[in-house]
Length: 429
Image 1 (tube, one colour):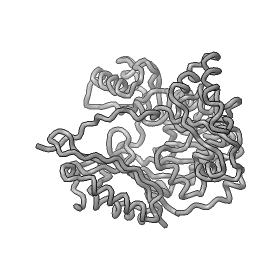
Image 2 (cartoon, one colour; image 1 turned 180 degrees about the vertical axis):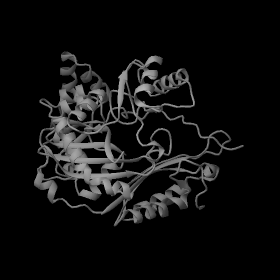
Image 3 (cartoon, helix red, strand yellow; image 1 turned 180 degrees about the horizontal axis):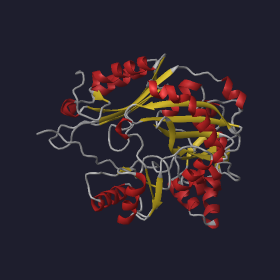
Image 4 (tube, one colour; image 1 turned 60 degrees about the horizontal axis):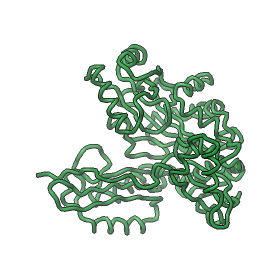
């Protein structure tokens, strides 16, 4: 009997609150979070109950909650930073006169964002928005095409994203999507935006991590998403920077105008942006924008290529103490190219996996200079129901993207990892 992996993992405490209080005066010369902390500033994750009280908007609750985080050790609270798209009411309370308030409010209203972007000549998919009903889906099919992408109008990221299945009826799509929203703890009465599915399964998608100083983009790190359409609807297993696809490279000269339009739309003076863009009819169309750095190892890849930690740029903008343009311009990256990947054990190899393999892998990752970061989850059990599995996020630097991909494969394949959605055979131990 083949082993089956079942996820019985409880949520990590604090995992729903990636908001950090900042204590102590930040060093204006720091270019990374590590350098900031070395200079005496400390970052402390704010407890979930404190964030909930701040987010409630009640003055009495906010005063009580702020009193709990106003000091840490001997340092005074100077502000806070959030690394996802949520907790904006809490962040406004933690950062009086918060410079990012308007931009953050706009990007979590997708319909409003798309309208504003179009006003500044930034292409977006065709869309319609409304309450999730049979009539809404029927209207979406008529107005935006046969396979609309459905997503809550609030927030960025992949929560609640669903591509309409043409092989199912409207009623079956409605039932399935409602269940997916429930699994993601998203209220089914949340307004939904239905957008045109651009480019088909051969679509080319990139993400752009931009640093904005004094109302203009000063660096833009572009990641090509090699697997964005491999699994329904979007799965980013491998991302390379700079892009290698000739069609993407050919159309990169259009990006500065798109980025300028985005910055103008957001009215944003300083900070970090993570932008999802897809090439359609020879034009870049904006799918999503986060007023924050990219998640996971994206920030590490940006730092490797630019010398600037985008998380620090985001933190500085939250505090109203932005990085100086000349400091950003003078920074130098450590690698010309990066490759970041999300890997899993090939399904057929799971019964063979044992924990000692990963101690060997960890030692190799630590000893390999081009590795810019990694995160490994491991499990081992000899059972007919639970199958051992592991998830590895890893990033490598290289002189060029082909070398980066080769370095990645040489690291992961001897340990039965794969970056493909299928259970293809990979090199054995």
